Length: 382
Image: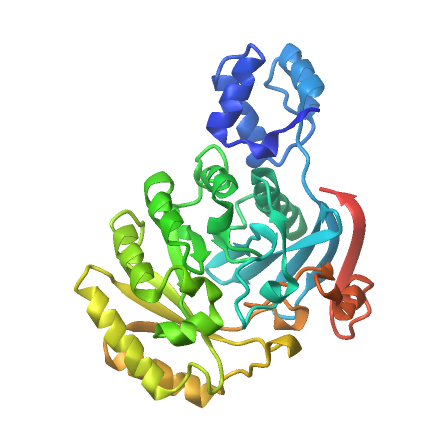
């Protein structure tokens, strides 16, 4: 079986080239061809010796994921469904803004955490993605968008690991993928512009601080353990105090001077003034231990299985005011791509639900949902 070169960070690719009897600098040339130029055909790599191209042709390949479909939102957001085999599909979302282009990447097929407000968690967990499957989402999207938009310069300036899955439960495959994103010979992204979002896997937060510290976002969603146990089951293993202490430790290595806390606003569940006051008290307590924070309030995107409702905007605004009056930087996330189920918490994948066939997503695959532009490309190699 030949090696998929998307599975390697630069160090791994250098080791692979050495096994072929080649100098390590050849790996840098190869890495640039793959990631900066989007090449998958070794014969296109004209500054590589013919003998090396022949070796690569016999022992390696550059193979992205198969595109199942592309969904284009009215607001410019684009969602791709990628086939990862065995009936599993993952989702990747591009969010264009005036000053940046953000790609939301999946790390797992499904998710095992099971947060109540997340449709992906209700789907269930299938498997971890490989490094190549994580990187392939950026590799495809960047070079597709350049061609689609007629641009030579980089389109994607920010990457957020906020798609399907819990990134820190796929740590061994995540870190090499992050290194590809950060490498100047790859995508050259700043550590400040690559964000890992976690529901709170405390030991892996500590490891990430040592191995590859990027921006950190933590899905908090509650100010006290009893409520968070109900919303984020992982809290039973790593309670809030333990999680916030890990965040304070991480901050010493983080590229930003704050940790972002994500807070999904759920009507009558976690959105009351007393919840905001409890958050203020909680953050003041941990500020003494060195934690600096920013809150991102997220409008909930309802789905039937959750049994939850979105907080109305006056309630969200009142909640935000309590935090801001206490000196906590607070933003309300603008909902993007909700007409194509690409908004936060909606990434469920065009797959069979673990408890039965999700008819809505099956209809989406066939392009049957009215008002949504769906480009179906079953079996396309990218």
